Image (cartoon, rainbow, N blue to C red; front, side, top):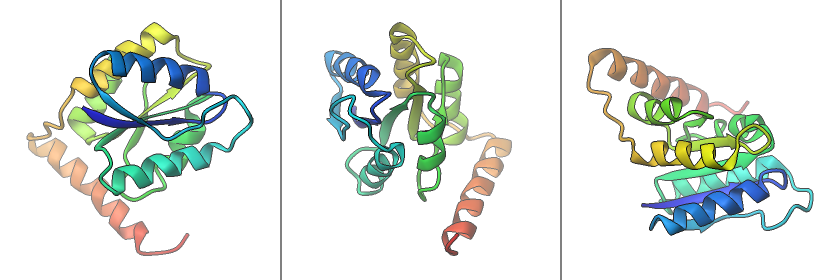
Length: 154
């Protein structure tokens, strides 16, 4: 699978590890930065991921900062992005299957590398399968909220 990955400075070491892990599993990984532990601003990384997904560079992404919270909040401001912070394999696959999550967010200071690998594998193996009426109804409501607020400047 082709995917994009990005982080801020706090997430850089885990990003490098996850990027190498995914490449070793045969995934094509487009690295959008950052490329060091020099201080950087997490919204820039979130925006780079959102722009890449919306431009069709990839359908999914991994986004990392220290806690995961900052990049998750920033990414979810971008129309078309459904980012979820996951530190367990269940949330990682369920977020895709029920909510069409397209950005996996990890907190580098929260999750270890082996768990990050497991969570990322679960995210990438999952498919959006919301065929039950309750899941379709809920997902359509999420899309309606996005459409409503993307029409107005906040």
